[in-house]
Length: 284
Image (cartoon, rainbow, N blue to C red; front, top):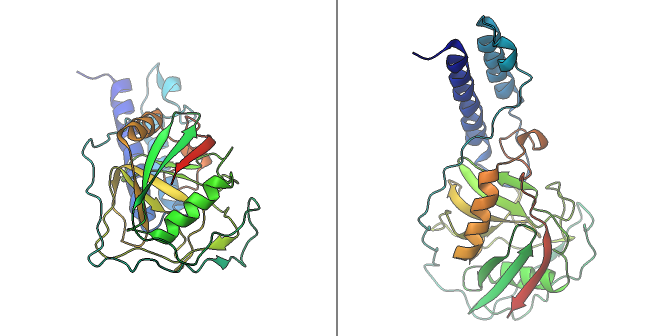
């Protein structure tokens, strides 16, 4: 027979899971930016307080609403998502229209990539060296040549060095978002690039994709690495994959949880295990 304390803790955990699930439904529509879910959180949080405070017992103080909620267990699928493939190959080479971003200054001063005669064939091996471990990537020019060209250029200019991954999602949208020197979700390289997504794209474990706002052709330097589930519309350019060793690093970071109190109210937040890039190696 469960005690009053056990019943209260079980009810609290259930409501905390509801908070996360409701927030996930709101945020799945986009990667960069935040959506207001304060009302949902406030309502459910109030219910948690009522359940805790309405039960009497000597251990009521232990279950007070000021107690920090436990880090929820993260369930991560082990099967990789199939890599998308363009139904019709791109011309080779292609032209990439990198435009100055008039809406904001560059977070770090860099030169725009060369946009003429960009190859749309072949792959490039990259290793993101981080404080959490090395994350090897394979960039695929056939999927998104402009994104690959930009990523290589930024890497070679040291743009990603000493930057932190600022956003971790652990339920519903299981990804780690990086590439913003400001670690705010608002930073960029001072230019934008064309969208290279196509309708057949699906996201899942092992996929590397560009982040963007809801505006078209708004990608810059931010990218996200999917280690689990990601039910997203086919709007984000996939430009590569994450190696098995890289996924092990992401799994470790994910299981440590996200600091949702430091996030934007959508159930995501900075990873509790810091991921700071110390360098990037490119084998073009």
